[in-house]
Length: 589
Image 1 (cartoon, rainbow, N blue to C red):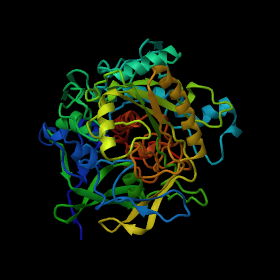
Image 2 (cartoon, rainbow, N blue to C red):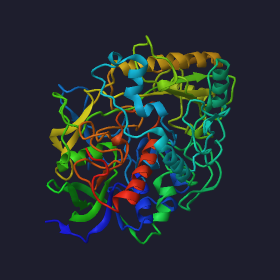
Image 3 (cartoon, rainbow, N blue to C red):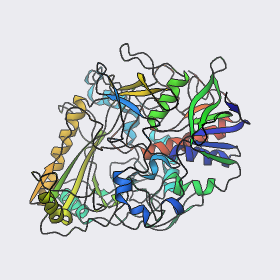
Image 4 (cartoon, helix red, strand yellow):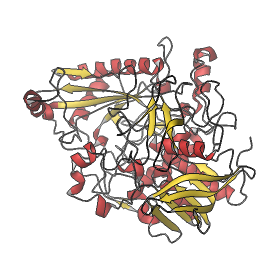
């Protein structure tokens, strides 16, 4: 029997980016908030300090900040007629665990979606005709516009201390920034971080070819910065250790470095770690959630936490799993196309490349992901798709900096994967390689979805979430097109040799690609096309709000975190300004 605790105003499940934002905004509105986090606490001064944080074996290879598969995981298959098997070690994507979540180890590239991305289906229909959109492509318009989200994009930039260069400031195009971006209300909080040598070479070659390179927007402060919550961030040290690792300088933004220092001083907030939320307690007749059932992983005791408002802000898989296990919303049925919970799972389609310059010293051990330059000329609506055989697109990047000593080594094609020759080649080429990536959209497809696995269970006895996913012909055609365009820039850089690395036909969960997973609890205009409304409130329980990338109808060409944060702030504003005054549906179906 679960022990019933005293009711609070709000319980937040998952203390990553979205959970941190909601907890802070709601405590500022005067509400008492309990934050439940399945993993451990993370305190930068103790957990992310030098010299231990620069342990590449611990963080890059042994995945210290990543979720524990022995407690909870998912099963995977490429198509619905296959048996799914559990993922025993995270590989292609790396869900974080502990306070800060995936934000602790992300690469910190910080984007806004394009204005036309928010009206994707309508825009494609207007430009190419309704018949051009395949029946299997289940994309839809977002129920919110870029202009509505722009102030919240701006606020999230100022939470994170983003470093970058505006290309469209209030409708005025600015040299040096991204000319394709939507109008910004303000410049980035910080100037771009120092570029890498390879990034500068890439930018020069791209510009000579008529493209529009610009420094990547990077969610780490290029100079000491105090954010809008009064939290001070340090300056990026160009240390070369960033992805899969936290930041010893408190420069890289995460909820741990930008929000938790303020929340820890807030008397209206209580953090409970090692708290594994297992089920939402749902009163279907009243169309509300009464609280959360969770297990204390330290003691094994089970608790019921009643709350007036429940914020579900875990990772994509956990958000979807929680609704399915709690019986909230209709599960997606792949065979009939009915139901919505689990529908429109999307990923990010990436294909890298490397080029080698034997006469150039590129100092790869210094720098950060923010030292890259970007070409955005082939992202989404930025080019004409007529006759190309696909929709979507993405950006490509080039950089030589931020390459740690183990994971940052590239060797020319044909080099053995191990042995004495491999060792000689890694030493020879480490200082002379530039790395590239093409990152493209993944548009929703009826065959890519999540549901409950009939065979496997987690540590609490719940059925595991099952992921059915494979890249589509559209994804592969889009990626090949991006690689072809990138190859032209690489050739113009004049390397001695280079290698393009296209993705295999069938998706595999083994090699890392990105942690840009989206969908499953998608947002929309009515209960017939979505799980949550435009304010991320569920249609089936008015006091349950779902945060994060699980609400994205499809995945566009950019990293999702900037939009995730803007949506969290957008929803928090509606909760505090409207919902608290008159609890109930914010949008009527």
